Image 1 (tube, rainbow, N blue to C red):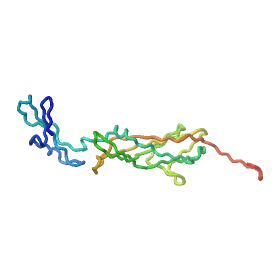
Image 2 (image 1 turned 90 degrees about the vertical axis):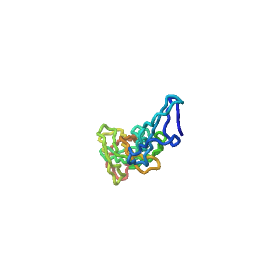
Image 3 (image 1 turned 135 degrees about the vertical axis):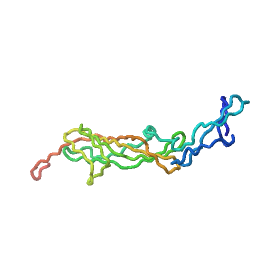
Image 4 (image 1 turned 30 degrees about the vertical axis):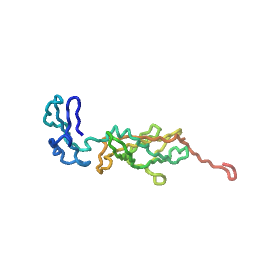
Length: 214
């Protein structure tokens, strides 16, 4: 509808008659047709003549108005990575492989930006494993696998208590709901998971006489 306000400004709409066309400024949009340009005209008083139409905003693309920023992405409820430590019995052996793995999954979420519904997908780009024993952390693009096809492990060299932490780095992409074109989020987000503490033990064998309790 036509709009007026205290400064006697009026914006162009179909009810206000013809005004210049600015759609030629945008040749192609990724997310559907270009939005119509916005024109306005003014007058000093209600009884004054309207001025000529003047451009208030050029034609624009939907993707130029709605974008998922890295701050928006980090505020999404991204799930922490799944974390499994093997053997999963509350203790591991010193100087033996302690196996770890997670899941390589894509998270799908919905959000809104400026009232516009947006679909988001987050994919793990890498995982960083920290072992809790002052050793160097490990960053990998592999999610790892369980025994006997293990890919990732750590060898604890001292007795004591251990705890594994994995940090997942997420890359994101988004699209306007109902559209097909995806756009990359500029930047990454991170979520972490930490295992329960476990004991690092040493097992020793000994010889016993037949028929005695060992």
